Amino acid sequence: MKNVFFLLFAIGTMWLTAITVFAAEKTVETEGISFISKADAIRKAQRAAVEEAVGVFIRAETEVSNFVLKKDKILSRTQGYITHYTLLKEELTNKQFSVYIRSTVSLDKIKDDLIAMKILLENLENPKLMVLIEEDYLGMSRPQMRIAETEINARLAAKGFELVDMVQLEKIASQNKARQALAGNIAAASSLGLSFGAQYVIIGKAVVQDVGEAYAGSGLKSIQSSIQLKVIQSQSGRLLGSVVKNGVAAHISSLTGATLSLKDAVQKALDDYLVDAITESFQDYLNNGTPLKLHITGVNAFRLYQQIKAEIESIEPVVTSKKEGWNKTGGILILDLRFKGTSEELAERLDGRRLGDKNIEVVDFAPDRVDCHLN
Image (cartoon, rainbow, N blue to C red; front, side, top):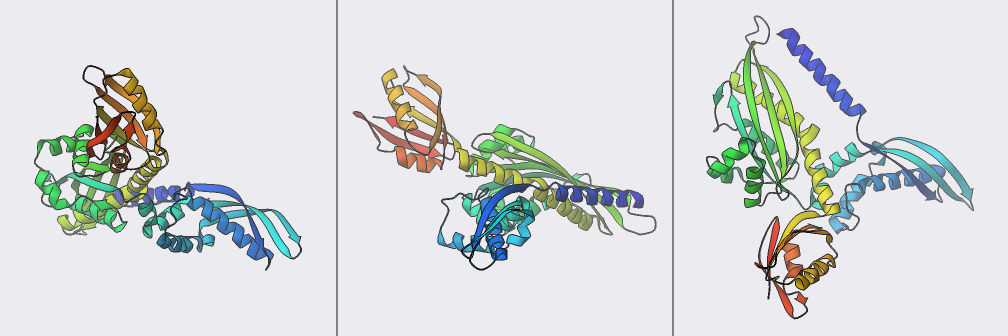
């Protein structure tokens, strides 16, 4: 068992090394100008390279005062983010130093700092998360312990994510929809997320096993845990992906060992997959629009359908508009939209909007849809 423990440790170390080697990077070419020195011009070119890399995560229009101050802290760490640079060209004209450089910038380091300073989540409009984990400890189901769920919530909260309150989740834990979600029903998980206003739902299972003595005569128990997590985008009902991670701990107490090994597995799952999956997904929705359904009643003529579709597409934050269905007899039109904003922002733009002699009235909205009536 001792050999197994060290083998697991070695594999984990190799895996972490691989992650470092294949870290996400961006190569950019930038210019720096200075009247002081060539070195100062290079520093300015490097700062410009980092600023361009920051732009991968941050929208250009996000320039509120506190963000500017925080961004300056990011940009001041230029040397830490640039892993390599090549001087492509240099000129000295009228005491002006001009340089062109090609820099390789570590996006992983920038993203970690953006999250640590809460800049990225502020820019992503603080997505809300729901966490539901089924937990099995040492062959016994102990839902009241909730070690993995608590650890995930604590780590996500520390990174600045907004979370559905665990007390609220306790009230629905025994409901059929929660059981279906934990069983892997994506539609049930998505519906639960929407009901709590959560953009993302994390469902999964944690299993802890006592595999015997860590090594002969030690008195320490070898506790191994495994956690499987799935990430679901509530509004689209899309499964972003899943991750499985293992943790190992040796302790005289089975319960303490379970806690330590689960914390190890949770940290790996969050750092190696979960946070990336959520931030990249939300970034995509901010850049390309959030999927929303628009239901409009009172559309009882083809002419009205065409007018409404053209009017909706003229709204600047609407990226795409696609007809899901239209029933002339019932007068119901359903459009699938990609909208750069929330459902409430779309509702504000639509309510009271004139369409010839007709008027659009918003009657209801939810995180994934807006309901209107044409009067």
